[in-house]
Image (cartoon, rainbow, N blue to C red; front, side, top):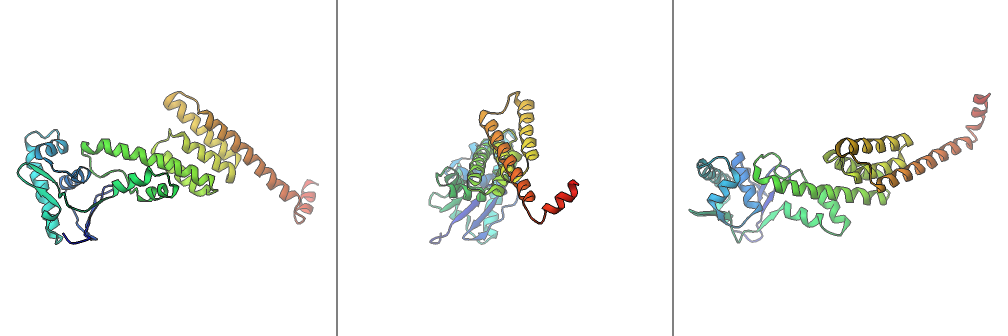
Length: 267
């Protein structure tokens, strides 16, 4: 393999494979599942183990499916002008990514950024998350890892929404919180951020509606009331929204251009 050449594999969202910047378009769901599983567990593994993980209900035909998937992967690499033996090790018993291969996996990078203490890294993690793990594939072997990464993404959304709110980026905070609640409506952190954001830039009615929404969801799904932190965010947001409303009224009353019109209207 050439110096500096990398095998870049994106698993977040739809599968994307590139070698040295050139696309390698893996066709066929079985072949995509195989390259995805090899990327997540790059060491050489027994063929029987791989076949059972990918097609647990296929019985003896899983071995044939694995051979077909491997042939498709190798053929796709060859068609793209890439020697498959540079990247894939396969013998009669095992298959894996080449132990000397330079592999760049978006899942690894996402986890590093998402678990960093640097808020900017968490922002970068959000940008990197292109979708749930191999979201177009229904193979059960990806389910647990897909759920784990999805939970991590939601945790990052909650942290980023709160940080944006603290920095005064209410629009950005609302976007992150709304995305979090789209994925899991039970995440109270998202509701609390929206409530606070509406208090700062919205109306009292928006604050009240959002609070009623979280109360309704929590009661219907879990039969519980909001956390004290959510109640506190609601009370603070109401106070802030009420103060802002009063300031707007005061500005109108003390505006010289408006004052005569108010007198006429009141008369």
